[in-house]
Amino acid sequence: MTRVAILASGTGSNAKSLIEHFLRNSEIEITAVGTNRKTAGVIEIAENFGVEIFHFNKVQIAEGALLAKLNSLNIDWILLSGFLLKIPLDIIEAFNNRILNIHPSLLPKHGGKGMYGMNVHNSVFESDDVKSGMTIHKVSEDYDEGDVVFQVEVDISQCESAEEIASKVLALEHHYYPRIAEAMIND
Image (cartoon, rainbow, N blue to C red):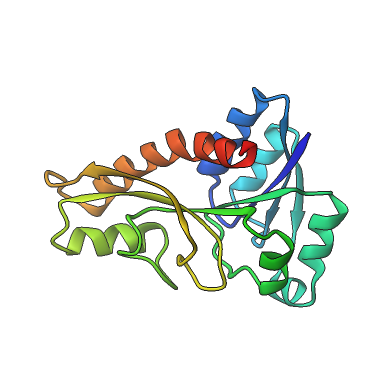
């Protein structure tokens, strides 16, 4: 059994799609969901599915408590799902090539520190881009610069708002992230 932890900071819609997907897989288990925000929507989602929740803050990450928790849970893979904090080098090294992140644009465009959620979609909307999409990538020391595992694009030439772009991209995320994560874990 491969044990997976999801790290999330927000509402948890991608975490929900991951949990639902892996409920149908007897070889991969979402063991726990970790969050740095005690009011994150992902908490209720994890609780509804009976998935263990744990909280941590920046200081605990820096002091190695997050790595210790992941090790105590015997985690094999980490899936980031709207997680806004930088993953420290000790975790990247401990989970070498076993941490995936999802980003709501076609990286390298509209990526980097501070580029998450509606910040990304507003940037895309204000650009001349006629397509957007989502990227799944391995996590490295720098925001959104790890090796790209998968990208899929969507036409946004007719979109009249950043919210419309966000809706199109989120549908792609929910569809592809669980499937690509499963393929990577099984590889």
